[in-house]
Image 1 (cartoon, rainbow, N blue to C red):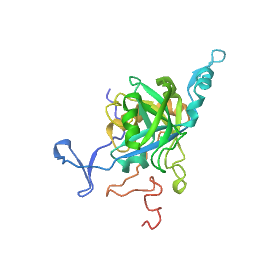
Image 2: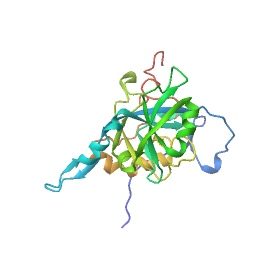
Image 3: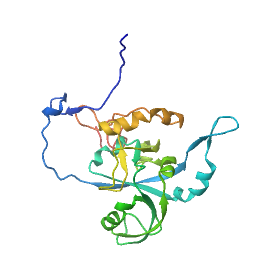
Image 4: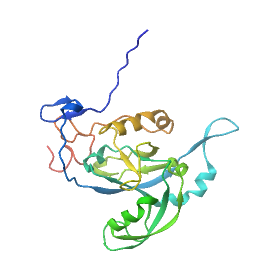
Length: 240
């Protein structure tokens, strides 16, 4: 027998006509967008294993002990759509990419990354990222996909107007490459099909980790930020 289910998915939307658009209705223009680099602090190591004695979830002690230095690090993302950051709920990595832990040894600017900070990059993009950030780095060690999957991060806006205090998990994603950026993709399930699929595909695992899988709606049908984007919607200073 046939079955019906009710769900949701991202769609192309016109804020002028306030209606969904088909792919064939969209015409693209060349546009030079603003880009940002954002640091997500590592706040915990949370890889779960099954306890052989009672079958209950437990932390992997070996991974926890060998990865403690990552608690001092940041995962760095690069995006050409900075307005999607309020909707961020995860960061994706690829098990096929080689990653490393890098320490800043010198910085040209008084702002941005400073000496002593530890950042995680895809190895193929670390040098390019350092040049653009005007810093010098020293590669400390490899960071495995297993380690990345164990990390829980903090949102870069954590605390802004009392929001963004939720955990940000690291998720494996087939769409992640090391062709540009940092080798990580910031994931906003409200703003793109790949992000939406990555988030919903991991929903069961996330719930087991105690992470709320509800998808926020940070932008309304007129293109304005909502209450799901604290500090940018009506709750911002001077907001309507």
